[in-house]
Length: 359
Ligand SMILES: Nc1ncnc2c1ncn2[C@@H]1O[C@H](COP(=O)(O)OP(=O)(O)OP(=O)(O)O)[C@@H](O)[C@H]1O
Ligand SMILES: [Mg+2]
Image (cartoon, rainbow, N blue to C red; front, side, top):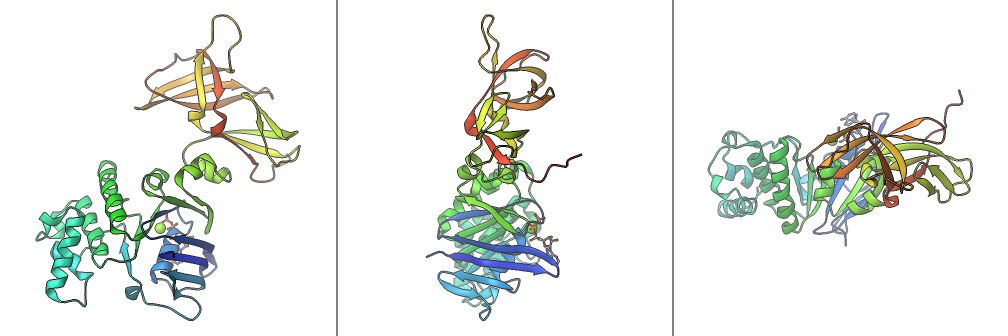
């Protein structure tokens, strides 16, 4: 039984089709990230699930119960959802405890207070129970907002870019804490983010959206290691792109031929290579280098890894500009020639996106 399910849900604002026929289900204790570029429909999907947008097409199920379809429309406050948004939206005139107790409306005063304090303990904010929101840092305010959403023990948590208002260091810390709190709560969580690294950090599964549709859904490692198309491959960080043409089930690259499964000869393709898939080695003094020969254009240390800009000769006479990301601090000298080989598990071949202009 899934805690939350979208079944063929579409949603338009006038002529703009924001969500286009999505189906997705989330289990209890599971954390799914809805990931995608700005405007792809993430917030709309979340709002439809919460009941903040009236359902137009499809069906929303919660714990095997219809909460929205053509006939039924359960109001948001009866859906057992906890909501957390980017702006913490705490009431400034209420104390931290009162803010969290607000989510427990309809219960007795003692029960509300006990529930609020329990939720504050859960997020590590018990000692701020009597403080007012303006005295808290952004990270602390977001933890209170999380406690407020969790206090009624909802079966589904819906979070929209909850950490994007925090600076980088604080964000890492707050989302680490939030991950554990959400997992312990047992709720099914759907969290919106446009940051692929954040999605990979938080999610059991990622649903990557594009133009209102789900491009691919699966565990982060699956999207990263087995992307279905060039959009998915390119969304998780920079990729090198090489154009090619299929010839007998293969495409030629400077690093040898790669398999082009299921593509007819003559099909224009894009070869996508992650920068960490390129391995650099010194060219042996005698004998042939193991891989292709590249010239180092620039080398920069980026902390835990280094980025090497390479120029590699291609068959058509044009030099390719490629980026290699290598671990550690080793920096080759500029203009040095090196041998480059390819980790083929991180190179992907897809039919080229659109028709190539013929002029
Ligand atoms: N209230 C609205 N009225 C009209 N159009 C809207 C409305 N809300 C969103 N849209 C449009 O619907 C599309 C999807 O918007 P949505 O806010 O769901 O995207 P998003 O993925 O959450 O983007 P972001 O990452 O920028 O928050 C966009 O084209 C947006 O302009
Ligand atoms: Mg949004």
